[in-house]
Image 1: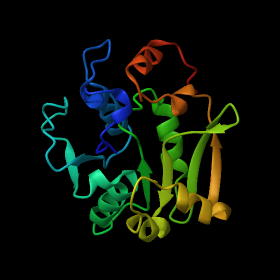
Image 2: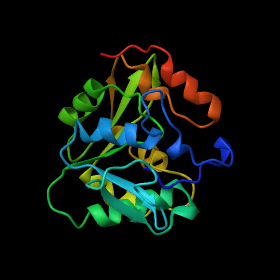
Image 3: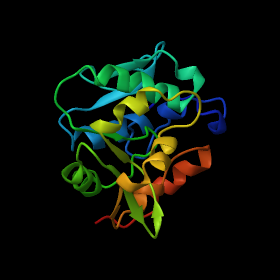
Image 4: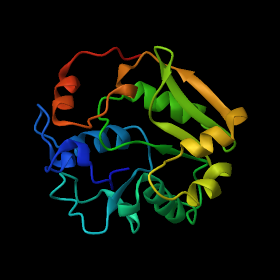
Length: 191
């Protein structure tokens, strides 16, 4: 998910912020996900230029037509596209401002995914990202709108939630403000 306006970051587009290795924040997160999952799509606004965001030309895109309405609307747009595709039994919702999630965490979540569950990684007794939604929940994701993301679906289906304990502080490290970029350089524990 990378279609938000990130107003807390200031006037700059945080997706273009450069990390110590020279990659953009978004490109780093996308490369981490694409290195783990066979099918990886990046959700962008209609007007976004993928090259300017540091994405490679072969990056698969979904354009969120209702991105300005909020994360829930962008997620609904994405699920509307993905639901028409055969195959995957689950959707891993990764945020484009979280490049520090360990590949082992992503792989663990991918292996544990099923059609009927919601998976939430937990580190230090606190849930983080990404969240995995089984395909049975996709119709409800497709009905989301506004700012609220999948949290409403998680609350409605508490009995389907399975917490996956990981040794990965990266599930909590997102970049909301310019100062948060420094936190990506701090060591974190990865299982």
